Length: 69
Image (tube, rainbow, N blue to C red; front, side):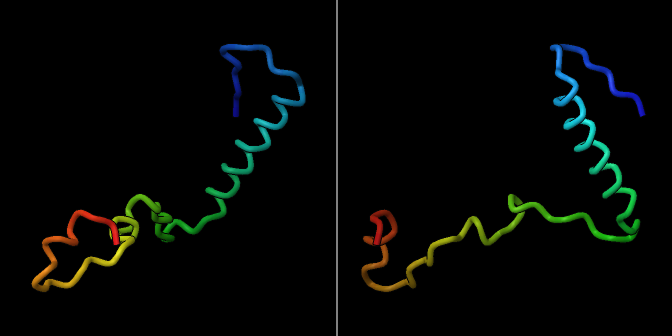
């Protein structure tokens, strides 16, 4: 593994910290079983879109579609 600093002048401590993160991530990927599913992102969770209950249709439902409850 080769790390090359393109811009900036990191201190040895900063470079060691960055290298530790990269190596830990590589070790975690290598240790994961190949048939394990990828973790799903919170962005793909349909529950985050509908966080509030939708009012049930009724005679006055049209008036509640815009104004907060």
